[in-house]
Amino acid sequence: MRTIILRQPGLVSILTLTLALMLPVGAMADERKDLAFEVIDRNAQQMTDVSDSIYYFGEMGMQEFEGSKLLKDTLEAAGFRVELGGAGMPTNVWAEYGSGRPKIAIVTEIDALPGGSQTPGEFARKPLVADAPGHMEGHNTHGGVAAMAAFAVKQVMQRHNIPGTVAISYGPAEEQLASRPFIVRAGYFKDVDAVIYLHIRDSLNTGFGIGNYAAISSVFTFHGKTAHGAVNPWDGKDAVDAVVLMDMGFDKLREHLRPSYRAHRTITAGGIQPNIIADKGQIWWFVRDASMPAAKETYEKLVKIAEGAALMTGTTYDVKYSASAWPQLVSKTLAEAIQKNVDLVGMPKWTEAEHERAREFQKTHGLPVVGLQTKVTPLGGRPQATSSNDNGDVSWVVPAGSLNFPSAVPGVGAHEWKAAVFPTSSISHKGQVVGAKTLAASIIDLLTTPELIQKARAEFEVESKKTPYFSLVPPDAKPDVELNKVEMEKYRTDMKKYYLNKTPRFN
Ligand SMILES: [Zn+2]
Image 1 (tube, rainbow, N blue to C red):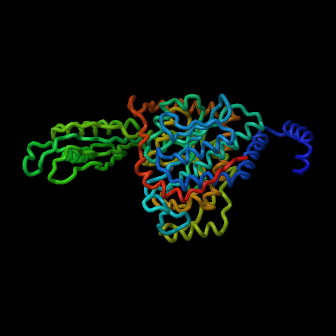
Image 2 (cartoon, protein in one colour):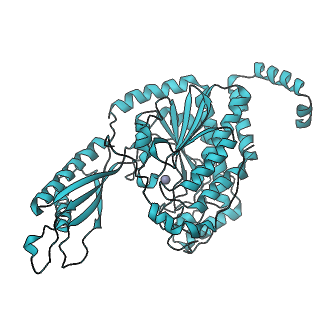
Image 3 (cartoon, rainbow, N blue to C red):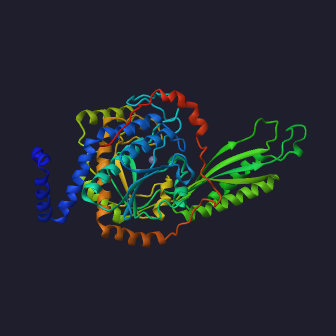
């Protein structure tokens, strides 16, 4: 049948036309999705080559130079316009295909974590490079899945003359919450109709409601005056005393904060030696809450405490904005649309060997021995997580949906080395295929169903107005592009030995 079709294109068009006239709209939609699925199956290896390459780059936030270059080259070769370095960040990638509206963007990230280097497939702790960074949250998989899905959508848009634009935003330094507020401020989402957040999990799912916590991160530096600790301490002004008093001051405040708050800190400069009164003391704070106005209220009290600590010690202080993140406002309309594709694509067909490997791993690490997930997750609201993701800001300026794909083993927490064991495995690869298919099919629905965009927009107008968006970024603040630089450069040479040196090309 396939041979006949290929050799007689004329007959095909007549057949296709006749079929198209005979079939209901839904069947047409399926034909588009079938094409997207075909493209993804054909390019599965190329997709996972992208993701696996990024795993071995193991680059921390703002230092994703190899990863962003690979994505730029891959996507340009695939017919996308790619901008590298937008919003003042050299590793910020924005790629798009098509023109005009509707414009649908995938929002994701590819950064690794400090100390996460691990030999893939090894169940015991065995870094590839000692102390080096690595992918212990699997963000490497986002690289391939997003590019693959966008390429499949492009092929469908071309074949079926679908107007509009498909875009990908790979934001740097998600792990430090350091880029999205800047990307939003630079106006990248102004003409976008909807975004889909993409993330690795152990299941295929979407959801809706408020996800994640608001967070504000700032560094407080106190400046004092040195003196000999024994000879003339009365001449000194101790900046570390100010740090300690700030810490104690906030602890006194804790009783009077909403139960939903979170606050944590680390002392990043605590003096040099006991007999030198420190002229510099520094403390780095994270303040969080269920909503940004609530987090900001606590943060303003924290600044007052810094003022008080400076007053008590005769020191001065400055405060540097470090990062911020709004909670995610995830659209029910978009969740319902994505769920249809979650149900359509379904979970990967795991082999018994893959189940066994997952069980073995779970057993080794004292996790519940449940193997791999086999059923898709039904649609529903999700409890708000107390962690944060800086992509939250995007969802307050454009309707946002969310898609998680099953490339991880159940029970393994992110940010621990165990999560770096599977991101390049066959389990991850199969999960990436269903992730890319679900994502592509959902974008096709968004591009071809104007009512869906309108409904999501109407919902957004109501929901987003309940907490009007404001940016936490000070007007003169610039992204911290030096973030993680020194740390990354320490290891990059040794890590290079493990690079895959592949040049994936979608076709
Ligand atoms: Zn993540």
